[in-house]
Every structure is written in C-alpha cells, then in structure tokens.
Length: 217
Image (cartoon, rainbow, N blue to C red; front, top):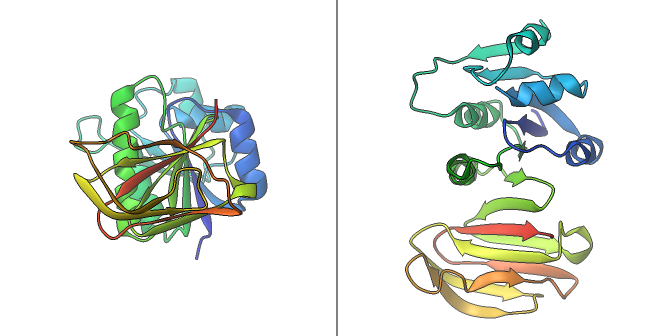
C-alpha cells in the first residue's frame, strides 16, 4: 500500500514547499498533471504518472517525460478536469494521504473546482490537502486536530462547504464555539481568521462539511 501521494498540477507552485513535502512527508508516488509536469522535469522530480490532455505542456517537455513514467493521456474534449483524473487515480491506488500543489492559481474557477474535488478524497476517507506558499486547505466532515507546534500559518479559517454545517465545536482556539452552526446563506464568514492558542486546536461537527484553511500572510 502506498503512503503519501504528491500531485503537481498547473497552478502556482512554490519550489520550497515541494522540497519540504518531499523531505518531510515520505512521498511514495508523484503524479504530474499537464503543466505540472514541467515543474517536475525542471526540478528533477521523478513522476510515477503523467496525466492530462497536455494542452499546456510544451512539446519539448512532453518528450522529456521519462519512459518509466506511466502516461495517462486524456482527450481534450472531456467532462472531468485533468486534476480530477489525477485525484481519482490517487484514490484508486490506495493513497493514505494526498498533497496537491499547484491547485491554486490565477484561475479562480480552477481553484474553486479543485477545492470542491477534495470531496472525492473525503468520501474515500483519504486525508487530502491543497497547498501553496500561503494556504493549506482541506475538507472536514467529523473532526480535525492540529497541534500548535505543527500549524501551517498564523490563522485558521472555517467556511461552510455544504449548505449548512451543524454542531460545530472549537476548542483550544482564540474564538471558541460550542454547538454552533454555519450556513452559506447566513453568517458564512463567522469562522474566518481564528487562531490556535492551546496546545492544539480541535474542530468537531455533527453534520455537514467545512472547508478548513490554514493560512499565513
């Protein structure tokens, strides 16, 4: 069984962030997604899989993909994005954790879609995160704990992913909450810019799904 999978997709990629993930998270599988393959090639990162229709990858880079890399070439006319195919692949190879870098960028539509795609991993009970140099994003449907010494940044924000989230409890945080609710249609910004002040921050909820964003300026 694989441990952790790194997906490199076509948005903004911070080299130091990828280096830290490769050093600290014991990445066992790397999936390059279309333009993300360029980053892997430029930084000498071997890709176990290369996925995409490759409409944003220059021909010379396409030719540089190692022969040992398993190619999954997609039709440009398709319903799923290249990143969705990569996430489904990470799920199907039984990843125990998935880190997506390049999933946030100048295309807001792609960024929002990629956050929504984390639900595929949540449903499969596979921890999954989208990261850039300022943000670490995941979806939570039951509980989430984060030690203060391991936090990604200063702030932690909670946003409702489903129409309503009920029974939210926050412990070890600057702004605590007991059996609270959030909705996309009222108080959607209630959970923005909290901070962990205890030894660990603990988030629990009874129903619904939260977007949890650890961020730093």
